[in-house]
Image 1 (tube, one colour):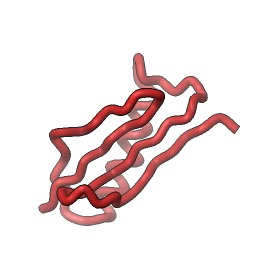
Image 2: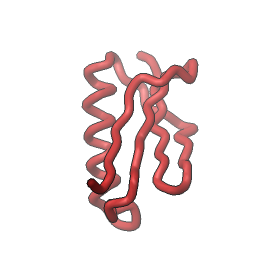
Image 3: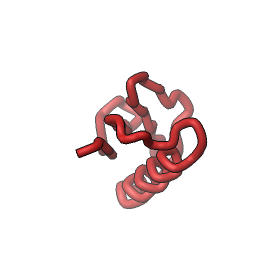
Length: 72
């Protein structure tokens, strides 16, 4: 399995330096949606309508996906 990193930008940049091992891109997409939803609805990181972005990168640093939220 490959390791993927879920970095977050929400006015500050939070680098995921641990990552998560996942078997394929379907699981990467599912995990990014699940993680984004959890982060945006829980505690201190609950979404306040500000621009929010999660960038998913593989072990080589190649961007594999993005989850974004912004107030329209």
